[in-house]
Length: 491
Image 1: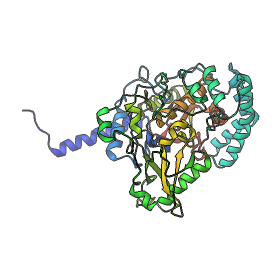
Image 2: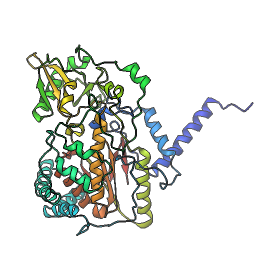
Image 3: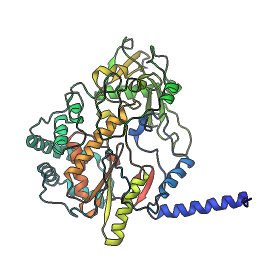
């Protein structure tokens, strides 16, 4: 019978193994701290492949962190070449050749659309502005100033692109803010793999939610394979006939819920309806704190206006989410990059920096609103209603006109739209050495430092031209340390 190790010996062996793994990770990523959840606000409803809603926003547990690090170190001795690479844009993503492409901004591009974008960047001094951000430490100090500059540059840039492609520069007829005709034309011009998306963007009714209407497959995301046993066990077989109550947190923070709904109505993301509307299906809501505790680790009062909150809508509980499954209206699921994908990029970049002396850097940006940029098909918005009390204790109701956090199809639609935006940008900037990775609403642009200011400006202007808003407080250009899916990473 083999010798059985003592408990102290086993513990010592595990400690030694973990130190060795940590050293392996340290050679690639300087994991300085763990922050937030897996993503910012936009991940709120996606969950795993089944699209299960996330009903909490907490820091990862020690065991979850350990699992992530262990998973990363499994690839410590494997070469990046030959591994499947996921950049968040779909199953056809390929690891770019970092040895090919320009090291500095190009004066004349093969694409007429890219020439328009590049000319706009230079004419409005956006490349110089982003260079100044880099020199000042990498953070945007004056968000209003940058927003104003991007908007000024976007107007003539949009007009020139639309003239070249013979389309209208107007916002979508569905009520969304994005420029649907320009977006669809760029998809067709670039030969994008998602051939059903252009028509969906142009549909004046909005994007089908998979409640009553079928969601046309893209062909570039994994097939949706629901866990029928789990869904039938945990989700009701039919939609709730009547609304009963919200989760207890709304009793404490009902005014905060009202503020969120009223703000969305003002933005045009929701509209007021009768609380007794016979065809409305109302959702059960919860109000949670972003982070769960204050800076001292103590619990907070949700009713405190200084506390950042998130409203969680449980479309699983009222039976709405099950419609997509029972009626077979949702055919695909999202595909997010993992730590191994970031590792592949960092390993390749680190190799070029060490062996060839190249200087690479990172730009990070964050879409503002994510799902809330996308219009829901008007015929399905009645299933996305909220009943609540006004400040004077009157019963009121509103329904979503944009995709909410918590709906099963929201992550897929956002993945398709944001993934298409990144694919178009990759097509426009194919003359450059760069990698772009999309994680829900977070975009990481990794390129040679000599072209970082120009490409960062071009990316921000491209998204602004199409009227997809940015979170300026989360734009970082050329910082030494960057946040990557819960870790702080240093090149």
